[in-house]
Image 1 (tube, one colour):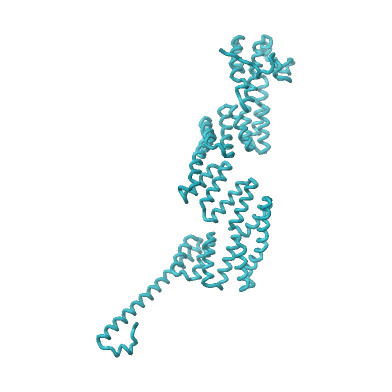
Image 2: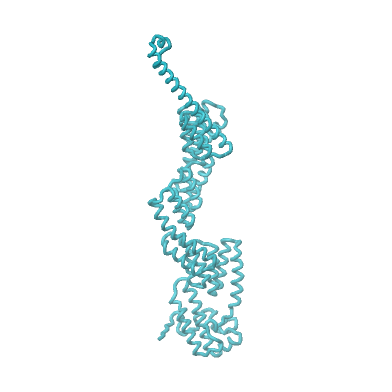
Length: 499
């Protein structure tokens, strides 16, 4: 401790020199401390000024960086904390904003601006109990605060509405619950419970895309959790959006590359998505064989998810039609339509039916597409095309059906008939392919009947169809019973014996 000047005068010369040195040292240390304090405050002031400047220019992240530095320099300055809390609020980082405003109120409990801001955040977050406490305090200090009065007046009705929403959801009245939650979100857009509840209600009403939209907000407000990304990816995959699901699961892996749920799902998803994209690109490029291979691989990799399989069946419906494998096309078209009615699939199946010369069925499918999409130009053009082809096909070419020349003899005709009948016998086919085979088989049998009967063949060669009831011919295939011409009953009972 430094001696008073009066005591220094009583010391000897040697002692006086020592005391003088101590005094100078203490003075130097004091000055260094003062300089450091001045320098530190200058740095804080500089950060605050830069933060204010960035804030004025709308560069919130840069402003936040400087407010961070200012708080580190003086963590007990309530005004600096308040400024940083306001920037957090502007950035939507509500949890950090509340932390700063709460710290401000610990340092200065009567700072109503901080309490009003915290109440505002609580209200926007759907935390009505804490919001009421803050606004009640503000109004006790400032009874005529218009903004505080406005917010305070909305809180109790909102509390009651949220309680009603929960009762509606307990009673499975999800549609009315959705409407009421939507109203609450106008007051509290940052509420995780409200958005989660509306997402759950959307899922129960099969509005998956709306549910996903709310879950994205939940995940953002929760600072992007791996669980959130995983759940969103699964929902996207469930509705057949494999590419978007893959993007979402990659976001999960950014947080945890070996996540126990996200990583195995990613491996499966990557295979399926790659094949779907390949099949779609091949379909657009009219590469039917490549499209078929890729889409069949999707069905192999994914045996369970209905909408993913729907996407594969939809592609196979189109690509088998392009490849003129109409029986297989019809089978996949039916499986796709059994899952979901879609105008494009109806049009693709109609094209396969046209290729199979089933014109009435094709027209019916084109009309079904128009019922789904009244402006579907492809379906409208398809109906006209089908009617034109139907008119052209009214006169069957029996030589073409058997694949023989017009000069073929009876032996050649019978041989061609047996070959064609063996190939197209309906017992060799199942499901949709069987329908195509039945028509082919009937036409083959009709061709054999006409071309092996000299009189009927003569009539056909003269431009008349002896089996057409409109040509005044008795017992034609296009009459009441298409199998009446077979002596042994239904053509499907025939037995063929080939050496």
